[in-house]
Image 1 (cartoon, rainbow, N blue to C red):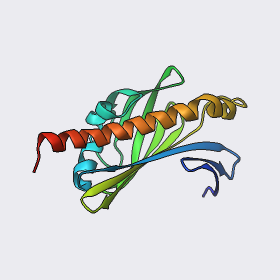
Image 2 (cartoon, rainbow, N blue to C red):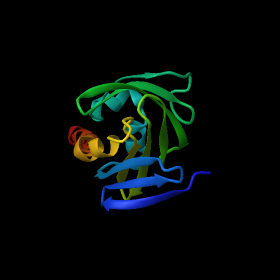
Image 3 (tube, helix red, strand yellow):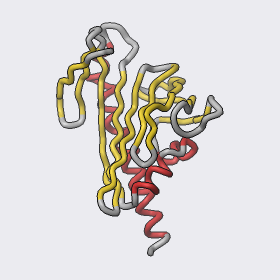
Image 4 (spheres, rainbow, N blue to C red):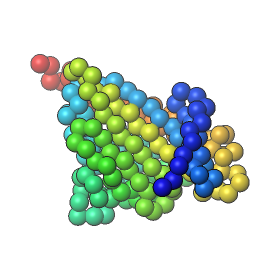
Length: 175
């Protein structure tokens, strides 16, 4: 089993140093959404909807017969630093209305954590991305100079898009 040490760099970023010496960069963003957790989770867990609110990704398609939950895999394109890269992610640790982990199976090495928490009638959604740029020696420098800032902006805008979806829905369908 891999042991990890977390080094906090700022409130939303840290470097995880794995025992093998591998560096994994981490960015994280949270948002409070004015909707119940089952509604937010139901919408966010539908991979067909991801391009409606998640920036920097496109062309999602299921690559397994399982399309929701553990074992589901999705191929898509991720855009960062001006480049579009093919990626495939498999879903692990899926718990209805709580969250899941996405683990890369092809393309850029990454792991995502989607966490949903009920807060009264609202939902706190936290998205964390752990990744490593596939460039020996220069990867950490390029991440510091370019990639990390772009990922932070993408996550902030994406989670705000998700929040806005539910605000618009509430305005269109007042109770």
